[in-house]
Every structure is written in C-alpha cells, then in structure tokens.
Image (cartoon, rainbow, N blue to C red):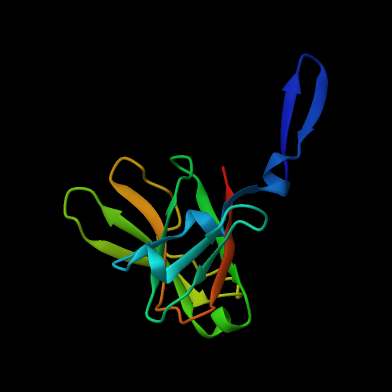
Length: 148
C-alpha cells in the first residue's frame, strides 16, 4: 500500500513504494576472473554482452545499491547455453573477508528468496558471481529489484 503524505491541507498518495526501484548491469559489467583475455569477448559496440570464448570461465559483477535498500528479486540474463549455469548474489564482509550467499538460481531464472536482503554498505560489499561458463555461453546483463 502506498504511503500517504499530507502537505498543507492536501492529501497526496506516494506511489514510489508500489513501483519499487530497479538496478541493472550490462553483460560487459561482468568481469571474467582468473582467465586470459583471449577467453572472453566483450561486445561493447552494439549489444553490451560478455561471451565466453573458452570453457571454465567464471564472471563477477559488482553491485551498488543504496544503504538500507531491501532486495526483492534478482535475475541474470543470458543465451540458451548460459541457462544451464547458475549465478549467485553474494555479500563480502569487509572486516572478515568472508562471503555469504544471498540468492542463487540458474541464469535466466528470477530468484525472489533473498536472505539478508537489507543492504548494509558499512560492513559489506555486494557482487554477482556466475558458475563456470562454457564456450559461446553469453551474459546479457542483470536486474535487481529493490525497495527503498
């Protein structure tokens, strides 16, 4: 239900909470880890996607949401080959250097079961990691929906 604001004698309905907020990343925001640049094709010219040219490639994508936001869903988009692989939303504790899984699903599938969903930028940083992608698997991007 939307919040109601009173300004002077006028009642105004605040629609922001019904709409929610959306954060997105393109495929080129997914950075391959522990591989040669020859194993990934970043198509910046038109589609903005990341294509695995070799096998066994894991990608990370930094996530930047406002402190106090509550994540309601996440989805990573990819081609048909990539849907056999998974993605995981993680947060890493600055002090301890340990990662915690918040959500996980197959690429192409939305996950709405988010643990530790409230963003705490003081103690954690957030990122998406894929499982090992194979040749021609392609990441198109990601969408995180949240309330703030």
